Image 1 (cartoon, rainbow, N blue to C red):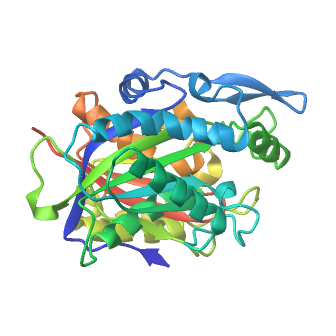
Image 2 (spheres, rainbow, N blue to C red):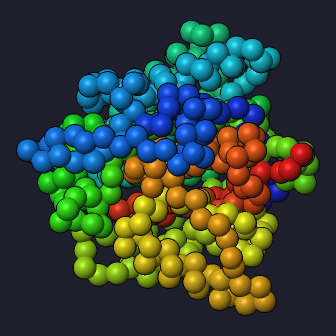
Length: 366
């Protein structure tokens, strides 16, 4: 199933907050990312020292819901302060969370059903917190899943704009931690973590981000602005990325997601200047991505495709459900501060469970 919004509308990034292992605010994280700094740390799990990328100043030694809440607050508090400086307008609040936040009642690790009790509680808590802070609430909706979750939430936001009474703006808030002790232990025992004997594993990271988004007509994009086009999520790929597995995938799920994202943005692949992905060099991600993008490039035979590659996972580790928003916040920050020429960029994710997502971010020159 592919979710994509009406192609004639885009969402302009008005403000962003970000907390990562590189820094507990947006500017620090963006500058450190541009300087290629790493803040990897060793963490002992099951008697082994594992490389991780924790946001230690934010999350400390907290675990479970407390750790997740600490990460959420790191992105939410500066966003709330910014919202208080603006006119009060009806706002749709979207929350992207890790799969475990949907609780033991979830039938799938990627369940994002509106009637999931655990997610309903997160939605109520967020809506109540906004009302108590004096912020108008058009609605609040929590999603839980893997790397595709921010794209799924964004697709919901685009659909909300097509209703008879749409929100005036959208706030997308996300947090996830693969550095939580219980998550680390689970992934280590499942042989997913990068180690001497597992070069295809990942470095666990954690991050939170918040984006303030306002709708604009795609034809009315203003200079020096950054806009998001429609998000696409492929929920039932076949075959899908697997972990662990000896069988290489063919990238069909990622290919479908990228095709839908390009359609939503009204672009062809050769228009795209940069590619931001969640790739960290793992062979299964690289093989699937090469297969998907190779076919797409070949189909655009008049031009082919040559794009720059930006891979935040190399510095931040894997970020789970906070991908998407972290990619967009980084891209917007690099563009705003003149640290990178982003232009029209493709953002994509490949989750280990098979879900793939993609979207286009467009950074206009002044």
